[in-house]
Image (cartoon, rainbow, N blue to C red):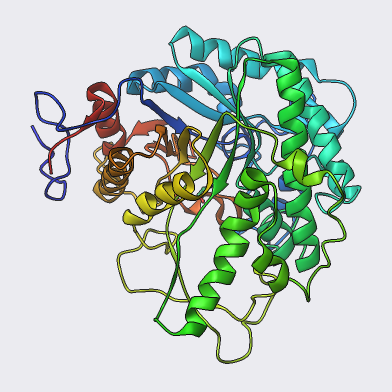
Length: 473
Ligand code: IFM
């Protein structure tokens, strides 16, 4: 039976083999992050991270929402893993809270914090769900921010120590490690526009932060490899195709600049061992790159085993004609560029739904940067959900996943070594500065009583996983 409420071509799969089959062993997963779901922020020795401080600062998040309780996953973990097993997930991507396992960001491990992740991993393995561990999903221990945060070089070294501590403790049961999640957000939203923790607004600091995040990544790869030689190591970057709004040379240049800051700022150092020349020139008025020391780029480009791509939408840009937008910008040196909306359907984040952009992105990474296995480590959409008779029929989210999985399949067909896909997100959760007002989950969370309701998209995804493919369109 196909789902009558679904748009044409999208629905629960009919009986019989899937029409669009993924390669055998394709890793189907779902992703979350520690601060967005765990809660229990002051339990078992955990100390505050920059997101605790930021979310508790008046005016920083919508309605003052914090991650204090979130999805209470810290206490409900076994039931949440059962839910994953019910959906048939082959892998679960989660992040470790640095402040939970190494309070204060330095010094000895906090055993009680590590025990939580040990129990989580063992629970996953009991259901044959491959654990995929992200070391850093934005929650820097507050003492490290007080010591200078990511703009300070020392933070990279602290991150490598923490990575080693986690690998030593969990590497016997975790094979897949991602160092950083979306370093663009940590650097440019955290230290540039200030809409993310720690809320600082200095373009030069944002660029330093970006460099030290990458340095920390490279050092962490070396530390984890030394601890666990067989581990599969990678990084996750959030990439956007950047398209000029018109065919004017000025718009083309605006697109080149934003592509430089958004995509190539990370891809080039990590996968080619250099910063793009044009980007260095664009940034002349913001930094002299004096924070880049001899040998840094060799560390940053330490060989990896896989590359993670998070994809949500495309940027369409035009050259600014008037004064720059007021307020701090996440685009140092390119504050004048305008972001244009095309009037096509958007999600509840106001992000345009652009599935071909995923195909373009995956092909570009493979063509221009790497032959390594690629994983889509996040893809998904926030929509306003309605509970009717205890059910959530989220056809818009389901259609988003369906369209993007078709794009992922097309990428594989065209030769991209795409090995897996993680839906964002398993659960509705704390969407950073938006608090709980945006829902990305395949599973609804009722924040009053913490009830979980798998939405239509979750049931559909379970069927996609079971069949290893999609219905004919
Ligand atoms: O919720 C975030 C996640 O933490 C990182 N990637 C984007 C998601 C949606 O904004």
